[in-house]
Length: 497
Image 1 (cartoon, helix red, strand yellow):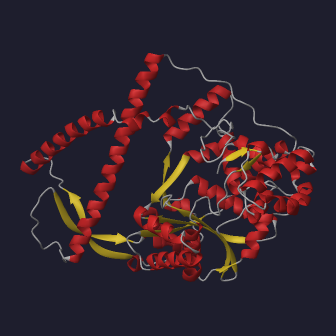
Image 2 (image 1 turned 90 degrees about the vertical axis):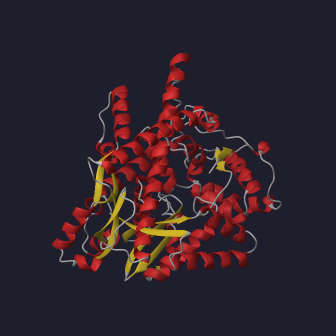
Image 3 (image 1 turned 60 degrees about the vertical axis):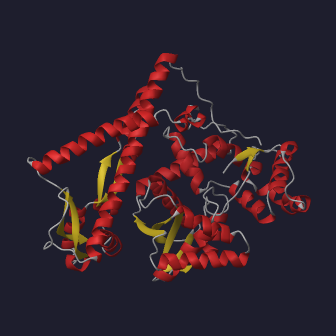
């Protein structure tokens, strides 16, 4: 979302009936916190409303007024990023301050931080049907309106009830299957907002849908034709999800509630809201010293090597995973087992037990209240930790507990931990396992096969080095967007059209 300065003379008229809309909403300006606190004059507020009504339709003007009246989930995520010196490209702290003080307004508004709200609708309907969720749009609106005098406001993808228990569901499109720190912060914030208006959510769910690019493009094209075509696109997508089509993948994760996260969100929101309503602005940071030209060139060259090598490694990993899956599907389809003599000795197939770790994880966390993080692989994010150490040294401030917690990342399931927990709670692992043929690389450490594999390794190694040198010269690595020295200092990007 891009914010622009609220200067009427710079705003082109996109809504022909803007004056009628202006008159309709002008009486509400007195209720906007910045005006009530005297931070913004009525004259400035009227200029802001003129810009908003010239740009947006009636319903979106109402949304802008609600957004200016408190802190939303994405706002608080950006403010935490600002406090921790983290680059958060979606939104800067400066934009948030200016928007709440009616010095800026959003140039565009979307329902779910993406341009395909119909996809959110399709996923929402699947979740309702699959898990018997009774959606409450009234409660969603209560959360977005917030409680009078409070800054807490948000609108989740869905607020509903399952088996007499309230749940909050957030839906994302093409952001990967794993839960991120931003996901956890956002769902915790939704919970804070819900509690502030008298609701009591018991469970939090992050739902991510991955769509094959071409399939998504076709759906978006169809949905843009007419409301009838949009409904058809929703129905097609629902069918694809329900039937596990190759073009879509839906993943659902349970988010465990953490009191420290609630405390962090409450402190951050209250502190910045007080600053905003006191007329404070984000201070500009001092300029950084530039490297000498020769060192800058050397740094850039090494950086390019890292970028190219990392992306080659990631792509090779994807290709390997896809090939392994293809081999396992091939073995299953052709009923190949350990009794077959295989024709190529670089790899082999062996019988293996595969456990439904996702299913076990969901049962343990929902039915036995096992902490989700205890069932996942924990690792220290070295880059983040080094960044925090550097920041701590420069500011002469110790690293906070919240920052240290953010350094620990949970990625992938801890199979041993899940199986141990399942046994402790009397879950029969046989109910969550199946036999299949698994692919293994040749494990020989001497002899003809080993020598042949070493020759392959050497040849591919030389090819990868030459390819890296070649790709470093690609024009894409000289993209000007990579030379802006961006950091989340709270300084907004351009606020003008």
